[in-house]
Image (cartoon, rainbow, N blue to C red):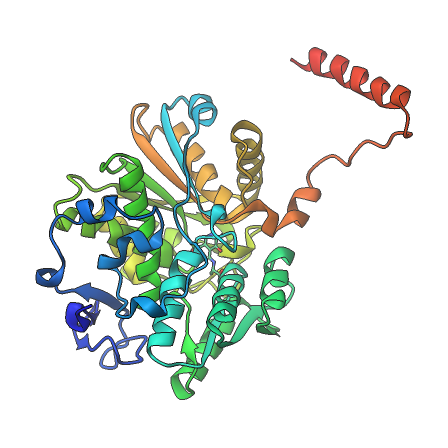
Length: 418
Ligand code: F0G
């Protein structure tokens, strides 16, 4: 593949960098970097090429910044389902609510889309060690892909604030897990500095190659909607990489003439961790960071989102908006989605459904609009939070009599309730 197909560009000052340089932010102005393609080197009629390939992240290879196919580190990521949520739609007075179930990815979250590309890039760059700070899912994903690639992996997590399932994943895949007595923002600050001065490849969403993998969510939605885009896409926002990546994906489809329209991007933050929402509401030009973010959705418990500039751009360019939801609304949305649609997601993912509900009640979503909610991670990642809210299982003697008595009692209870 032609190595000069793509390069890195600073989103603030436009400075360009060779894609083989290990650089995370602009060396001139510290701005965020973005992978940009030389469109003259991208084949035409990509839709025809893609149609012949399996439905996965790597179907879109022509728009991914990887040179050596043989080195691709994959666990079978992407190709997740897009569910038409009929009952949920109806309960909100809407018709076309869809859920993109990213919990179907190999490690149970959307992070795998980014890691397959980011870890492949680490291999191409001949890096032997990789690292990240994480609220849980990034570390679980990086640990798995590093294991597959045979790289040494270090992860920094906020002590006591990472869901059990995610911590278990990082440990079983052999990552060196370092719990810091601080929050995610502090962990990222530390690992960022270490990676700048040591030959360790940083795989947080500051890394523009990782975000390239995540933009394939947009490509898949377009594919699943018969080469059309939805009216609105709702994304939970933490470090703000995913909403930026998905918007980039839609823009590229539009630029290539593959999609006629563009969706509005809607970001959802938890009330106690909403620096972007609060700042945008106040009309600030810069996002004001929060020192002590707090939410039950630990995955998005972030006060200083590094990608805020990209996210604000995505929201403004797309004519979208940003909304906040309370912890109670998040947990209620998690239950509703599980009961009505059979989809079990972690609290951060349920934030997109809680946001949908708020916007539907405020009439900011029209009945016939097509809305896609991104369900970012699987519910099994964080079972503790569920067990705290659900009724405990009913105990019975191991006899038919005692079980049937309970079933019949339950029947009566059910009939009187409905
Ligand atoms: N949903 C889940 C389940 C997440 O794990 C994250 C981020 C987000 C949403 C927000 O995505 O940061 O791109 O805005 N988790 C990161 C981690 C921070 O370390 O696992 P974002």
